[in-house]
Amino acid sequence: MKNKNLSARGGSASGPKFDIVVIGGGPAGMMAAGRAAELGARVVLLEKNNGLGKKLLITGKGRCNLTQAEFDDKEIIKKFGKQGKFLFSSLAAYGPEEVIKFFEDRNVPTKIERGGRVFPRSDRAQDVLRVLEKYLEKNGVEMIYDAQVAGFDVAPVASGGKIASVKLAEKGYVSAEKQAMLPARRIYADKFILCTGGKSYPVTGSTGDGYRWAENLGHKIIPPAPALVPIKTKENWVKEVQGLSLKNVAINLLQNNRKQDSRFGEMMFAHFGLTGPIVLDLSKKAGELMAKGKVIISIDLKPALDHEQLDARLQRDFKENSNKDFINYLPELLPQKMIAVIADLSGIDPRKKINFVTKEERKKLAGLLKDLRLTADGTTGYNQAIVTSGGVDTKEVDSRTMRSRIVSNLFLAGEILDLDGPTGGYNLQMCWSTGYAAGTYAANLEL
Ligand SMILES: Cc1cc2nc3c(=O)[nH]c(=O)nc-3n(C[C@H](O)[C@H](O)[C@H](O)COP(=O)(O)OP(=O)(O)OC[C@H]3O[C@@H](n4cnc5c(N)ncnc54)[C@H](O)[C@@H]3O)c2cc1C
Image 1 (cartoon, rainbow, N blue to C red):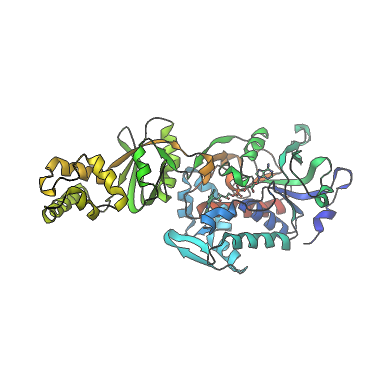
Image 2: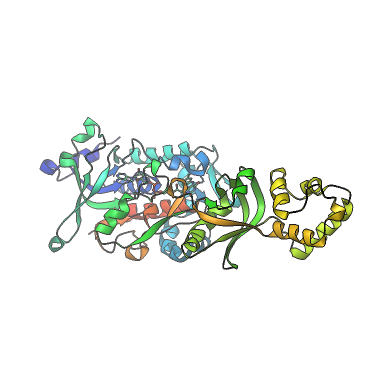
């Protein structure tokens, strides 16, 4: 690695001074640091873990769904809801095509899977991380691991109110070689890029530290909440079907018997409730609704048929299977694991001959197939949330440069911002785009 940073200017008594300190070695921080250094800035990247990208390594179940093959930025923007338009400029500068090119140019070919999900062809998140590590190394970024940042030192408002340095926490081991750079456990720089992520999967290092510092600096924090998170349900029967994955089903979120949102696709039962792509995608909305009152999750197991069509099918089936026991007919309709549950919920005697199933019973069965209801009982929380909703209010950040509108030498990128998208590579794309913008402008802007 080039050692240009070690001779960073203005060091002496207070330690070396860098052009830019990047805090957090996740996707956003790595992209920001690498990009700024590529443009010639002297950059130091501080990471409290003993390595980079701990969360990146578990993305896409270890395969890393690194972006989304949606090349119309407007469609990506829509997926981020109200705040989406914040991404307009950074996506235009560095969108999915640029991200794919970045990795492919560095010998990580990619492939597109169902729903536009882009993965490395090797199916290894490790390969994605390795590209970023090399990018940092090649451009001479000084990396300090086990460097847990405790906060910022800010100059008095009279002298501009800028950040002067970051303070490292007492705990955390920093290698002897790097200690020289940290007299009084402080690092000085002209500009600071905050990329500490959200609060989800805290074991990976994302413990929401940056929210507190940003708030102390005067930023508004939209209350963080777990998003893309499994939903717990009150009904115990889910335990009987745990592990069962259902493809091509629809789920509807209901409150006061009104449909609030819905998704079509794949879901899974777990011992505590529901998970899988469409459940995760609805979890943010479900969380918001739960804060207001009771939420029902209604599963439509037969979304291709409306009530009438389903009833017609059941009538046809019943004629053809008239001598079968009810329980022995159900495999025609349902996956094996669900048979006992649906039989039980229908209240129909499992040994009743189909011939004797009444019209009311048939309607009840159809009702269960179209509207199988579960009561939401919270989420599994940050420990299992793929992302965190909320964060630094994007209104206080310049959307082209990622520069704070409150503190002139602060930039922010990645999940710390109040931006969260659905599954499918959208969240990492947001990190690459905002990280790239923060790195570019932190390196280029004169303060
Ligand atoms: C299980 C799982 C699977 C996922 N799969 C995908 C996927 O396939 N595709 C997709 O698009 N998104 C996926 N995501 C979401 C994606 O991983 C995140 O959105 C992304 O990692 C956020 O990047 P970030 O750089 O903003 O923050 P993070 O990745 O959270 O990185 C922040 C870094 O800052 C460091 N840090 C925090 N506090 C301090 C401190 N005080 N001092 C020093 N360092 C600090 C942390 O240790 C961490 O390394 C997944 C998330 C999870 C949990």
